[in-house]
Image (cartoon, rainbow, N blue to C red; front, top):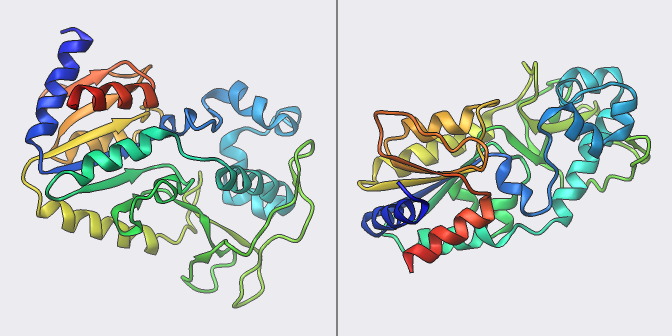
Length: 273
């Protein structure tokens, strides 16, 4: 089937839908100017100091990094926090929000991204599920409690050449130990998932009241398949937008569009007009 025919079929699904689920992986942020960490080459191009030290993504995005070298760990996460705060989500976020708001039950976003860009683009916080947590929230490294608090007061000053934090890192307001992002990292047994579980409960309650759900998935790869798996098992008609992995499984109603995030969303919205 041609791309034009796929888009028209997707538009018919959306015209019949009563709710929109937006599922997003890392590819959703690329068109906003956020870096692509696929493969060590791409990661080290963004963080050359880590490349020189041969520290890969799985090693620095790891709770062990905070025990081993807190200023290096916070150099990495502090840079990301500042970047996500400074970056404006691309227009596709708002286009999908408006599309979903026109439906009876509205829109809900499910994402593995920790950047907070759905909320920044105007999605109500109670309609976002951040399955891997959020860089805009902190927890205690020592695990003195299950408290999670906003990172709003922390303004990282990072030496980008060395990927090291220059100012004081955040600390737990209860026990004074080092704080870390409330993000599910690699090899992470200390992540406090309470906030994400509450989001998941709200999502499941919303899904239980929906009859004709369409899921639009953007930029979710198979390397970390959390988002792809949820898209394929949530009971929705699936529209998968992915320039590298648009393939869809048998057994569900699904359309694969081999397009980038913003371009794919733009063409889909145009087909719905």
